[in-house]
Amino acid sequence: MKVRVFKNSEELGKAAAKYAAEIIRKSIEKNNKARIVLSTGASQFDTLKHLVKEDLDWSKVEMFHLDEYINLPITHPASFRKYLKERFVDIVKPGKVFFVSGEGDVDAIIRELNQEITREPVHLGLIGIGENSHIAFNDPPADFDTTEPYIIVNLDEACKRQQVREGWFRTVDDVPKQAISMSVHQIMQCEVIISCVPYKVKANAIKLTLENDVTNMIPATMFKKHRDVTLFLDGDSASEVDKDVLPKYL
Image 1 (cartoon, rainbow, N blue to C red):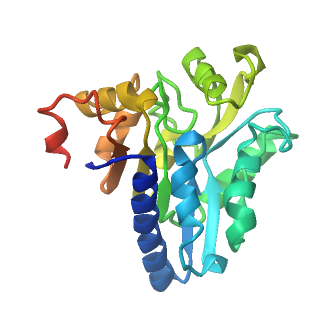
Image 2 (tube, one colour; image 1 turned 45 degrees about the vertical axis):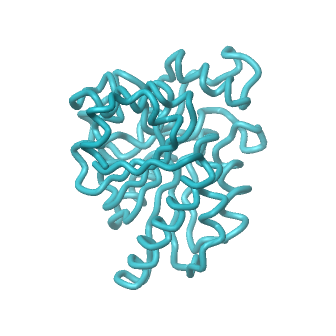
Image 3 (cartoon, rainbow, N blue to C red; image 1 turned 90 degrees about the horizontal axis):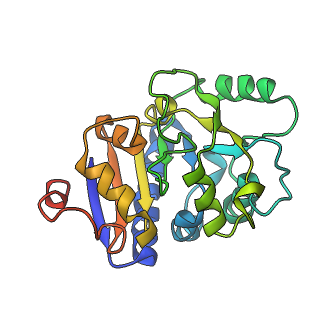
């Protein structure tokens, strides 16, 4: 695991987008396509803002995303499909888009997603880390054992509170209790992972991730087992990491 620290979220997003574009460009050159996974949430705003400005052949990009609430319509402000349509899909118009929908026959939706995601390698994952250190909606204790690509998960209270603080829902009771999430195993299948984690509210999650061994109680620690993962932090999110620990990752 490598770590890069930037002055603020804007600078972080600019650098992460440039790096992501390099990986996408190389994947297209090598495979005539690039298969990518995108995450959502407030921490990804600046990265996506800069990524959509990159000069890429987006028609050769296939996009998956990480998760979606069960029984939340795409018209809801918190819908991750809505988020990605407005901030990515409708702007660059990728060649293929595989949305995670929590409406309708959820089991059938998961079966189709599982078939599509495992059809070919995924070249790049932009994977955030939550305030409770989750990756996707794999809240602690995360299931590190399942090999199913997409699974149904229960959201813990810390995760729900984060969604309220970010303004997606008015109260914790308004947050759906379950979601469809890409599994930890499937996230780890991405050839390259870029994890953009700005802001002070993520400082404890980053501290726990970097200062502990791999444990499903801190799901993001699984990144330490990946062959090519880079954390993009800002000064705030890196602020609580022990001064003797951070240099080991730089």
